[in-house]
Length: 357
Image (cartoon, rainbow, N blue to C red):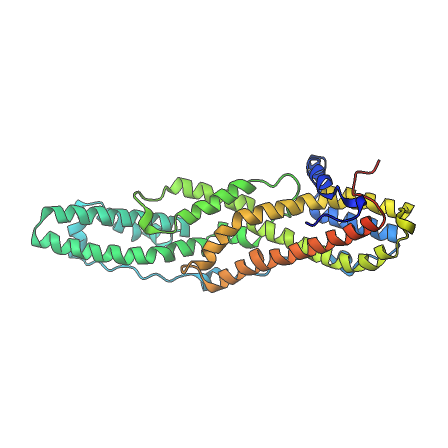
């Protein structure tokens, strides 16, 4: 942010930092309420009607995520005849194959299907190696067959991982169904959720595994993701800030320009406006904007990886692109335009955005 030329707003950055240190005082206030109170107070001081958005409701649902059936990869199984199946009973592969063919195995959740596939790849590798050590024609032929299965399952693994990301209830809620907006405090499990999302990304390559996926750990990480719903919460918060400030800034531009500050001396009205700006925007709204920035930049490497991943459907990639990139750009522009407006006004009136006495 450029430093303003006028004396009245030279300390802008210092005041913003000071405001961030006071956020605990407003922990129970949601950014929705802060935006509504801010607009109402400014409108009252300037004797202007509230923008239409604030009358209709400033929080809108996120665009609908494509249904999971459309996003799902259909993965063909491998066929094993009875002779091959009985030949596998001496290694763990036979047991793993049998588990998949039970009614429970056929209705696995996406997370447990990924666990099964990682275990299958491990036992395919071990069984192939054990058969090759026996060095006779029958076992050598079976080892070659298992090698072809392992090659196919390795290729299919990315699709199984994609089905977890695109089809699991935990991820769909996290990406599309927020329970709340971000607040200065009480953003439950937000940072843990970021770690959990990156953990899922480490499960993306079958070639990185020495051991099967830990089922308990995977389910625990998914529950953290489900509880926090951070991506959707982040995106709806930035969308709400964008919509509210984009409505408010154009209306305030003309109204603030008309406020009297003769020869750079602040009028009573100008000082009241400065106090409203400080109490509501700097102390309550801007700290939430700082959280939006923080979480966005922590998650952007993950979104870049997912957008480039061939295992994920284009509809999901376009949704992430629109929210994580285009939505953030629109939010940044709306926030910057609003701050610039107030910088100009406070500079003209030789005021700094400090706490009211």
